[in-house]
Image (tube, rainbow, N blue to C red; front, side):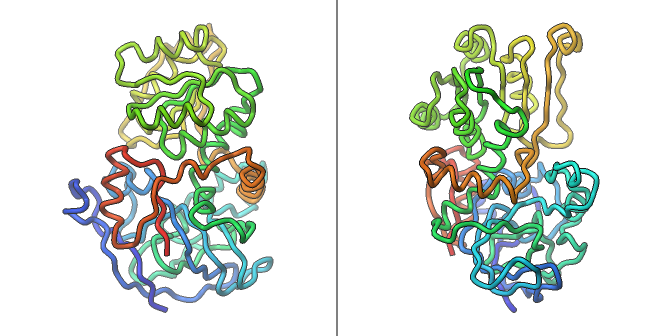
Length: 368
């Protein structure tokens, strides 16, 4: 079949993207699903900094590529047990094989065949269903239809609006998961979140969910700081302030028990570490350019019993966590609908990524 989608053929074109137009809306041939795969009619796909990082070249990928990794849709055809036409699914951007060593240990985010497929721009099988175009993280959700591995799909309640359902595929799973799974924050412990995009605000919602206190939110955009207060932050800090780290330490009585860096910046990660108390845990969620590195006083790791942890996919098991987070949303305990800034059309994507790069949006969602 022929699908219409947003194809990136060259990374690093200059902003504004509304003028350079890195995403080209093209017709691409999509082969039918093989055994173990699904044909999904995409209903909605979120715009994430991970997409932007491919567009600007800070997250290199094989080209050309049909972008989009945070998506939801309806199964049209199934070649996999457990799925049938009409099922509503959320796509997970790491397909987990279930058989490799990390999967056997319950660490689906580190699936080895899944990681290899994502780097190669293929599906989990190692092959492509798009003709002459690579898949993005096994999803390629910026198109009206996609073929995905069944290991990338999680069935959800079909009553969930698609513009909300899409958020669970990356922003919510990554941000809430960083709090619940990676850091395992306990009630009454202090937390700070650096960066209030979709993932950062999801981490904030996760901190509120588990009863962290106090909770500090840090960003450079005043409107995001205001929203953070509405969502449960007990204090906010403008990251542009020269004493921003000291403000965090003051608000948390000497430093946070848990600090979350969601920006994808080594400099911000150093700030997050500096804002963490003795014995505390610093969790990094952002994806900086591979050339970036950060340094800490080595003695502090021992003398202060510090911990630095990476969190990919929120250390989640998608088939376990996505339905749980959806249920919490439906129960009113995880108001992820507040993350939705706007819905856009396929032809509006380049301008929408300008808005994302400028920090004027939290989560824009492409609707079909």
